[in-house]
Image (tube, rainbow, N blue to C red):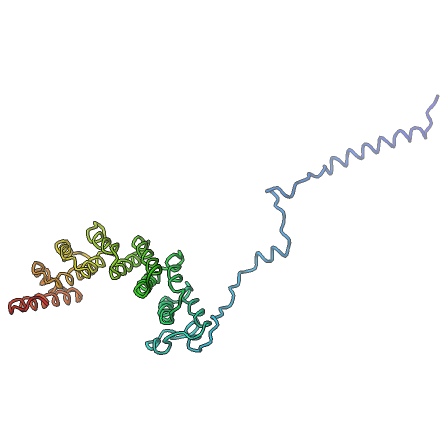
Length: 307
């Protein structure tokens, strides 16, 4: 039986279709599907979120604390000039309104404000009998963002507070001052020592003698000598004589002042050397020490004894 032309056509068409599909597959290979969540192709953030992320951070405009008294308002405003003046105590003897107390307490805690202003804020709060002053000062000491200068001011104010406090409040302050003897900042350690000695705390006496005897003592030796003098620990005179020719001028002056007040005749040669020094400070200290020795000697000769 012969194959007709129409039969041939139906055989050829499927073959052509298969060939076309093969050619298309070669020219346009199957697209690889990539998971857009993979690290190689991170998911794109929404346009609004990207806009917020690229937008620069704008600091809020400064607004001073609210006050009722105009003088207090100028004092707490960081933008004002001459916030601390010689007459500040007479100008603002104490705070009369709760809003003013809150505003000044805010200045005390504000690490971005000037140290001198914050120091006056503490004075003003003390004159106003602010009950939270002790807590705020301790917070200053505990704040890692505070600098050594104002932290040392805080110790001075705590000492003043302890002299006026009693019972548990005084004990709490004294304990904090004892901790400050081991503080990271030298100015804080110095002020803590002076405070404890003036409060008559035994920890202050022990620290003064320990720092006097220590091999190092950089930054605290002169304070230790001064405290030993205030405690009248004359049994340590021989140790203090070692510092009459110390390389540190401040330490030398402290030793000269202490031994001259104790009328230590063994120190006279060192006083004479200091009196001829090129340093104005040493020269002044040496001359004063020699005058003190001479005055004591004259008093002893006249039978009046030491002053």
